[in-house]
Length: 220
Image (cartoon, rainbow, N blue to C red):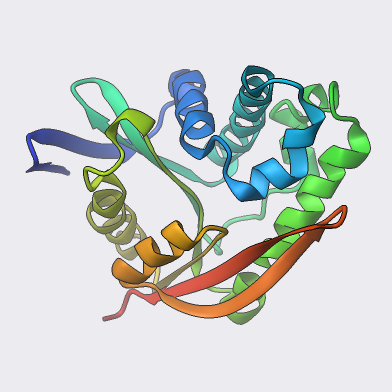
């Protein structure tokens, strides 16, 4: 599937295992100080580069697990990965702690401790709770990320409408759900046809962030 807009040619496909490191770096750099990750991990690191290195390792674990059990899609331009999406098909087996361990989870304990890492998984489950309970048969968008150097050029919108939605529909997906933790992303998903159905607060060691849940019916 190919398209062209603003002189950027993009093709979409399923990611390959040898692309894991490049995809992980793009994800970590794209999210940077994203509130959800920052309020769990940021205070554990004295410098931003150290934090970014840890986030790259964390994203590598999550993406590797998705490559083996779920779906990792990429947008590619001139042999360069410019966007990624992780999708959870509800008809396939859920990813568990054992899958994350096999994907390198034990290596993430060093530097932050097991308790903090387990807190991350607990908070993640809490954040996704409304989507999983209300729309348990929806395809869940675990991650949508764009190359930081190309943000603002519509690549996120294109990834949704030219890749994620067609892919889910082709595989009999009838709806999508997802969460976000920033007002900017909230407006982004509203503008791209998602309906907000829940707003909650996530708490961690006295700090709180907003958590918005979204849904899109693909039958329309």
